[in-house]
Length: 500
Ligand code: NDP
Image 1: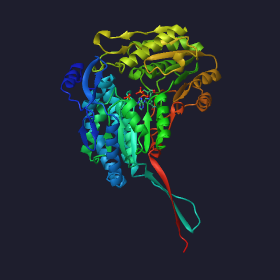
Image 2: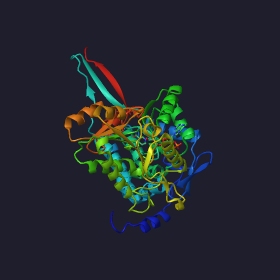
Image 3: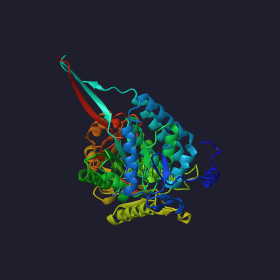
Image 4: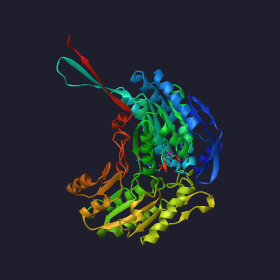
């Protein structure tokens, strides 16, 4: 980041920022039909940023009607894939052109450090949309093996109206993981951002129009889960819900689908990632540094956060000492300061939840060896210091439940089999990591770990080219990679008789 970009620069840019705060339906910003709004809070100060339209069932009906009309008119779905590509690439460029504005919206709304919003969230979202745009005119359909008397085509068609319901931890990135493949495949979309972080989703809707997306192809309905979210889940004219969030709400979407039109549902849910450090890891300091970043990055509000450190008892003390050393450099600060590495927790509820788990850890008998306290309380915002519990037992709540905060549970093990068994011993299966210099051991553990992604000698590496999603109650369906496009397509068989 250039030296010119200081806390003062971002503070003054933030002062002059204007907020789009309405729903975006049929190519226009509109208030909620009820006129209701909700407060959008800056978690670093506890102050209201703006009031956002609180969409409910009737707004969802209008958005779905607009998306349906656009889909049936073929203004998007019938375009040549290379034309959709042009628009999506331009959409990605527009996001990049508004880097500072979107990064500020993300940071003010959600509390993550501005350095991360600028370097990761906004560029990553643009890259995702561009990647799917560039992919879509290179994919072929299939001709099935038949005898000469028939021609059997297996073609892929868009599903129709896709509802994307996303969480608050990476607001624009999670939306982009849905929008990229869903739009590239020719669907129209109604996006519901999380109520804690709606601002970037609302803003990019007009950037999409500027890029050439026809009105109605992307609609945004900010609002609450129980109202706007549920209305999408139960809507009879929505063909697919693509959801990222907690497994509890994921299960609700399965129920909504079963009780309405049997729409397709995919769920990308939470995790309790085991980060396994064997005694023979090539570089224990590197493993410990990655472990610290793996839990403290994004305030620990990461679905695949390495929230369980499983470490060989023989090297535990050395690894823990290094994690604390890195933790000292990641203490929470003003999210608008480019030097800040850890920002604010998203809202007062989440702060309460994280502090509740810290209490639970103490009560269950784990040893609090680092942090455990709120920080920067004078700011009026919601900050938690990086926290480590040692002597955690696998069945404790802090080792089983997703905390979604900067809290590391350290569990010692004595054998590879024990590490894998503990690693697999939760309801989740989103990701896992193994650190060892023994390639056989690494592959053996990677095979046995029931997780959608296994990192070997690294943590949280990857890019848009590989699928991401869970086993067990971490959900099903995959975001990212070409496989994600399949979630938004129907397969059609056309069997042509070639005999006279
Ligand atoms: P929630 O499940 O609480 O919410 C996710 C979305 O669902 C929000 O838009 C929310 O709306 C909506 N929602 C909430 N209640 C309902 C309801 N009754 N009916 C319909 N919709 C509803 O998750 P969080 O936003 O708290 O996000 C954190 C979770 O997301 C964690 O479990 C995390 O692991 C997971 N996640 C998973 C990822 C993955 O790729 N697997 C990536 C990122 C996060 P509102 O908030 O406005 O009420």
